Image (tube, rainbow, N blue to C red):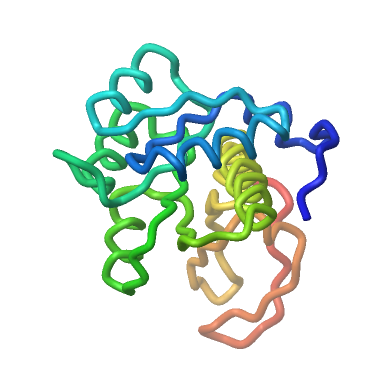
Length: 187
């Protein structure tokens, strides 16, 4: 069962304002109440127009989005939001349990997919996981890029080699002559 204690994990500093895009009023109010009990600020939108307006005027830290919406599908809403602010995590919350739907949601930028009816604890945990992953992606990407950086050096046999910089100082075997090489620590 969900606890009603303040959020003390990293998510509390990442996610404060959640936009819930849900056309079913009962579901929307249930989600809003649940999230507010866990100290999130929640804005509701019942269609794409309200969702885009709220998203533009008060950029949320997180979006929970239904797929079946009047006028504009959740896929379209998600795609537009991701084009505007790609760093805002979006969780699809839907009754559609089809592999094609999951694939399309991922293609338009959704960060997660949860089926209705849902377990409230699972929703809260998924918000934490997705928010933490998005934060790491945004803040640790420089570190990852450094790890993916490639360095070039040559073996004594003349073979030119290219490896990731994270392999500096490690021993490897030259693919041309099978000699053991130490990847240089410095260029």
